[in-house]
Length: 549
Image (cartoon, rainbow, N blue to C red; front, side, top):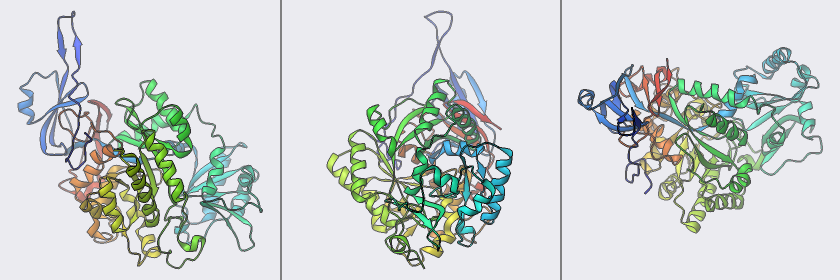
């Protein structure tokens, strides 16, 4: 029986017990570790001790009472609070890893400052190959969109492509446009747009599916990617993450498998399947949830629309002051029929589906597809809406009825609330409605969407409970009625995120569960407003210390 994060249904395996034979076959020693902490939140209660054998929790309670049992060793955890291991329900770990090798234009005041950074990067990294980078934000440039000519001045014949901060637009120079065959006669693809200036010339800014032409270009880092991802995983462990749902392409899957085969995969990974990789996944017989305690098959990732930052999320009502593409309603990247076909193909193959939907109209169409497929198949796979930023209340109720998980990223709210006020004022929607989702009975899973946002889960927890940026703005929080408690936020970032990935033995420190936890220097529950200042001191995965700082 499937486990629900609200506890109404539950399944967990019996605790596995490690055995070590000593001196011959007749002597068996159970290796057990008692982890002691000043204040340990198990997900259901506070204790001072957790007993672990073979990487799983076998008992919790008073540390002194547990110590009276046969215990092989005792470890004392530092800090003010220990919580179940945090799982990022939506992260692009390969993209985050590649940021180390790309040009960074985040935070630039305008396109000219961005071009200066590109020039410095090219000077330090000479060559002729394609250069990637990001993450520019035209919303911080007074709405002025960049132009390829600005890049052309500093790049010459070397192709350069810069992703927007939301990764739903690209800014390419002329050499890069030629590389993929884009020219004056190129028409907009379905679900995408090539921006043009007042003279009708391509600006080099590409939206949604117009960006996918660059997906077919090989990235020459297959040998380097496993190492880059190993470094990134170490960084994620250092901020208290013990598991992730990885959303990137098949090369990330190959790199993660390579790490696992080397015994170097230090955190738990649910690896999603991009829609272009679905044929390969089906040919290989991948099914969601299959794998071991370290890496498992995740859901199929679909895109139903774009993003708010690129003004391409698909809305029922038009963006304020806009009458552009699709009447200012954003960009649907898949038709209703395509959503149904992809979803049904995946579900019948045993693969769950996680569909990106930021606008309310996109979410409605995704739910229409899900309801159709669930009715046709009777499947109990856990379907998800990724981001679910702007929803109609009727769709929240429908998500609850269908058991659809809301996979949300709290920092998107605190990053974009001014844009919501500017573009979606007067819309009959719930924006970043975590409280409304929980009250409606929607299973909630928290993540970061890194590298779009900071992967630090403590920043996300702060955003969830305050709806403020780390500088305390806006005073009182943006739409504070949608705040959640720290206990609820921790649940969404641990067992809720694990539940969304189909991982039923992760997310609480209760008997039978995998022993993943993090010791924090700050009591998140007693002082939730200080969560963004919190620091992981010790991160434990499967009863083994994976980070100590």
